[in-house]
Length: 495
Image 1 (spheres, rainbow, N blue to C red):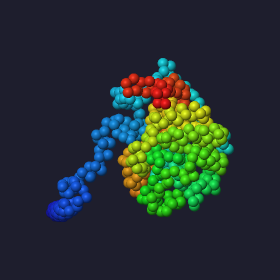
Image 2: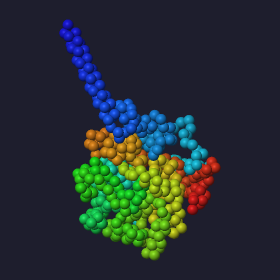
Image 3: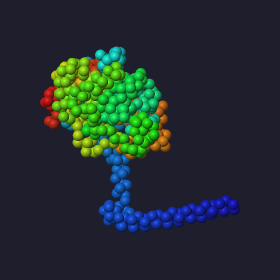
Image 4: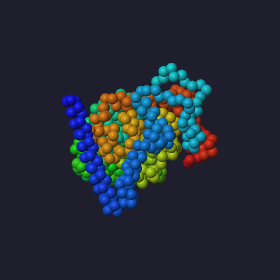
C-alpha cells in the first residue's frame, strides 16, 4: 500500500512538472513570436517567427556537422579528416596504417609524389642523425639534430595547461618551442625544453615605456639557459601587415602582467616595428639583439613583395656576411592564428609552396644559403609535407596546429572566443580541466617522434639515409596536364 502511495505521488509530481514545463514553453514561444515580428533587424526572423531562429542555430552548428558527418576524408579546410586522423593516431601511439588504397587524388595539379628508389635504405641500419648549427659565429651557437619543432604560440592565445604540456612535450621530444610574441611565461619554462623567444612588433616582455627594446629585459630573458635563440617577427601567416590580436576576454591578470599591458583590454600589436623604415633597420635590430644576448638571432616573415628581400641581401653584402640573420623563419598564408581579419587571412601573402622555393633560390643565388638557416612553417603537419619542405631547401620546419591537434584540438574554430571546448585556447578554468598537461605532453612527444619516424621512412624509400639528403630530384609535382615533373623543373618555370 505504501509503495502504491509513493508511485501515485510520483505520477502526480511528474504530471505537475510536465504541465509547468508545457506552459513555460508556450509562454516562451509566444514571447519569441511577438519579439520576432516586432524586430526588423533580421528579415528571416521577422518573416518566419520562431522557426527562423533555427537558421542561426544550424549556421552555428554547421561546422560541427561538416566535420563529422558530411565532409569526405580530403575535403575539409583548413585541415581535412585524413590529416587530423594521422596526427591523432600518432599522438596516441596507435596504428597509423590505412587499408584499401589512398583517398588522395593522385593526378590533381599540385600533388607532390616522392620517387622511390630501386635500392631503398634498410630501416634496420643505424645512422647518426645530422646536426645543424645555427649562429656558428655567436657567443652561444645552437645545435640540434631535430628537424621538426613547435612553432610560435603565445601564452594568452593558448592556455596555461596547453603551454605547460607543450613545454614538457618538447623536452621529451628534444625539439624547441617558440614562445610566440606574448613574452616568456613560467609555463614555457616548466618543461626545461629549448625555447625560441619571439620578439613581436609590441615587444612584449622586452619593451621599455616607449615600446622600444629594453636591453636589461633582453639580458634577463637571455639569462635563462632554456632560451636558445631570438626571433624578430616582421609578419605572420594568417595576417601579414597586421599585428597580433588577443581579445580582451583572454587578457587575464597573469597575461597582462607578463605582457605589461592593461587588464581586460584588447591586446593589439602594431602592424610593424616602429624602428623599421628600411632593411638597414632590420639588420641593426638583429645585430643589437645578438650583441646583447650572445645568442642566434633571426627574423620571421611572410613573403609577398620580394623587393625588400633583394634589398636585404644587398645590405648584407655591403656590411659583410656576419651581419646577416642567423635564420629566416618563413611563414605562409597557409598559417593560422587565434584571431585575424578574414580579408588578410584569405587574400594576403604567398602560400609556402610558392614562397619557399623563391626564398631558397634567392639565398642560393646570393651565396647566403649556408649562412642563413631556413625554418619553414605553415600547415606542415604531415611527414610528406615536411619531406617536401626539406627537398625544396628548408633546414627545419615548425608546426603550431599539428601540435595543437596532438593536444586534442578538434578544429572547432573557437580560438578567438575563449570558448575552446578542449581547453587549449581558453582561459575558462572549467574548460581547462579536461586538458591534463601530463597526458597531453606525452601525446605531443609521440606526435613529434612519429613525425620524424615516418619522415625518415620516406627518405629511406627514396634511397637516402637521412631526410636532410632529400633534394628536388627526389620528388615530382603534378602539372595541369596531369603529368608530374621533378621539383627542380617545376620551380624553374616559376622564376
